Image (cartoon, rainbow, N blue to C red; front, side):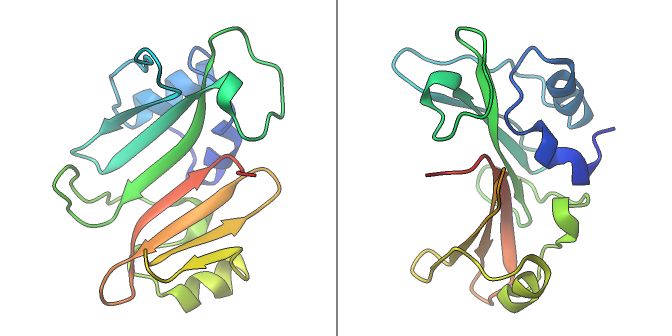
Length: 154
């Protein structure tokens, strides 16, 4: 089973590597990521479990930290939905970095440090770290409802 604290280490791996196959299997994500013509990203998900993963064409990564084979689709983002949406049931498992759904922005700041960006209009906060960044989206009552972890952005 994929350890949620190791999820950060899966970012930047590409579809076809055994660690990605294990991650997809652990979360019962059965779709094979395949880009449509002209797209640079593709998402695969387990909507019943509230998890979605984005793969990005290696040539379109904001930050390249390693070499990839031609046409590689790189795991660039994983999102967890803490509330039911039109498309997703709530995710009920553990989250990376020890965060929990329902946490306040201040509780996340206490755990993760000062955010790099705080978009009040979108009710979304981003924390930047050396090899990844974290997003949290908050609901109307200021509790975290969506959590994402992804490769760094420029």
